[in-house]
Image (cartoon, rainbow, N blue to C red; front, top):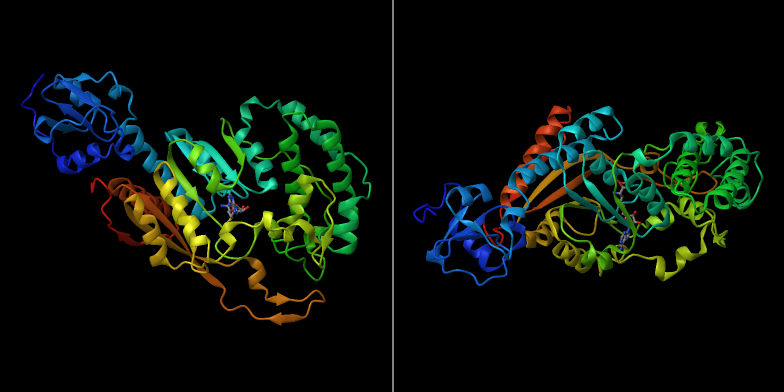
Length: 468
Ligand SMILES: C[S@@+](CC[C@H](N)C(=O)[O-])C[C@H]1O[C@@H](n2cnc3c(N)ncnc32)[C@H](O)[C@@H]1O
């Protein structure tokens, strides 16, 4: 052992020592503590008694510790710590994934090509909704856990995130889709509720949705194809609906696409395994384990996804619920149990703050926009518990419902839209070097994709426990 090895350049010894005293898991794999008096090197999280400051030097890798003659500690096993190189790869991947997500390039072959070169680790999408971001992260090579309270979201996540495309028998899937596609329509709940009492679908398509949904329940309930077939049906219904995207209302005249016949297609499945959880993020977070990246896209305000996508919720639950109003929303939309703390103005800031602080992640990405109850300064403060915070901003168009104004059921214009563009924020929070690298990579990758709008508007330096 070379006991004269000095702390190497690039490792801030005082910051490392503070992290060592705190046994701060965020620094695991990012430096190693070599104890001169024992000849042993440890991880920052080692449960052994912390050595005196004068007896310890810090190095950036297990290799460096071993080349200087130190032996690995038997308690914390530093040779098995996550490697910095792997994490640097992750940061680059995350940055690129963000840029691709922002650019809406998720379905392009670029993402698949990119994934082959990336080495992403564990990722978490806590409010996964359509699973758009979780799917992008899975394509980029991450093992993803997708969490949401919605039933339709769980079905999407079971199909796109939990299902390994490589394990699906394509011939069996195509046969099931062809069988369902050929079923004659038979009017039922969907036809009566969403085609006659309201106008989400044309009746000829509604009757086919009824027949196909019944057959999926009857014939595939216990098959691994169940979530895949349900996803295919929801995607097919979505392609022929007569809304502007959200299911709060339908459009006055039948939308052009609603005249097309419903067509089941293979959903885009992704190779690799992942996890789908139907759970409240606030309750689930404690049991999710450590991840490299956690992405949070919670509801911004009182608008509820339960009612925004109530038709999908009913297609999945298949429980023929009582409904109310012109939009035929599920009666349980009024039930407080279906409301989220993130839709309550007074409770939301506390819940979000607690969640951001509790997540066991190297980097937290918080997606928000300027129409929310919290302004940017409050969001930054809330994220600062994790260390540094970078804010990426992009200007986007509001959803198309806002673009065409606000209408009553008979089609009369009843309101005007205040503004048609909004700013999307993505806050990147974590240790300083990770935040800087992720933000820089996201901007660079955004530029490479020809997206000028993505920009770092602010880089808030809030020294984390290590201050590195
Ligand atoms: C803004 S959306 C997320 C959109 C998603 N990123 C996407 O690309 O589709 C918010 C999501 O949070 C879910 N949600 C609301 N409260 C929740 C909670 N307490 N725990 C988990 N998910 C929740 C909603 O069901 C909705 O899907």
